Image (cartoon, rainbow over all chains, first blue to last red):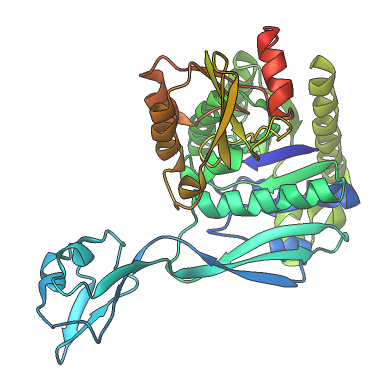
Length: 297
Length: 109
C-alpha cells in the first residue's frame, strides 16, 4: 500500500482538482484522505455520503466552574487575550479569544478553572461516488487545522486501506509549510507537488520542497497553467532538474478546471479531450514511479 | 548499543511506525542486556501542534545510540536531535521491528 500526498505550498494551483481526479482514476484501488481541513473542498467533487461522523476534540480552552468561583477577578486581570470578562459578577470565557494558555487556571485561588479539550469539529468516514472510502473532516467556526487532526485522518485512511487491501492512499495535503503539512508528509511514500508559473507559485514550491526534502520522500511535480508565464515555467523546470524531481505533467491553462468544479465533477469526468489525457497520463506516471521505487528497493 | 524504533506496537513483530512525532511507541532494544522495552507516546499524539519536538524530548530522555524510523523527523524535531549523538536511520517504513533490526545489523540501510 502506497501513500501519495499531493501538496502545493501556494493555494489555487489546482492541487485539489488534480488530487480528486487521481482519486477518481484510481477508482476502487484507493482510499482518499482530505487533509486540507481548513478549506476542505474535495467533498464538492467526490460526493461523500458523510455516513460515519465522529466528534473531534483538540486544543485547550479555559472552563470556569461557576459554583467554585469566588469572583475575585484574578483570571480577568492576567488574561493576555482579553478572553475573560464579567457580567454581574459572573466570569465568562470567550471561546474564540481563549488560547488555552492556562494562566487563569494557575492564578485562580479557588481552583475553579480547568482546561478542557473542546469539540472543534467532526471527522467522517464516507463512501464517495466511485464506491471508494474517503476520510475527511469539517471544522467548526474559529477552529484551526492541526497536525493532530491530519494524523487522525491519515491514520484512519491507512487502517482502512490495510484492512481492505487497497493499493493507494491519495492524500490532499494541507497548504503552507507548518505543522499540518509536516503531519501530511509524515509516513508518506510519494509526494506530488502541484505548482504554477507565477512568482509566488515558484517561491512556495521551493519552500515546501525544502520540507519534503528533509523527509527524503520521492517527489514528482506537475506544472499547471504552464502558458501563464513561459519564462517562469522554464525556471521551474530547471529547478526540478537540479533537485532531481520528476516532472510528470505540464498542463495548459484551461477553463475546464473551473467548469468541472461548477458541475461538481473532477476534470477527468468533465473534460474528455486533451486536458483529460494529460491528467490521465500524469496519474499513469505516478503509478509507474511507485513501481520503480519498489523495484529499486 | 541501545537501538530505538518508532513502532505501532510493543513487540518484535510490530510494524515500524513511519511517523516520528506521532509514533505510537518507542521500542528500545538494549543489545548488552538483550532486552526489549517499550514506551508509549500517547501524550505527544494528543497535542494539536508541536508533536515532533515533544517526541524528540522523549527520545532525548531515553537516549539511544541509534533511532530507526520511517521517513524521519521534521525540521523542528530534527534540530533537537542534531544536538545529540543519536544517529537517525530512515527508510524502515514498511518493515517490522525485527526486520528493521536485522537490516540494520547487516548494514543495509
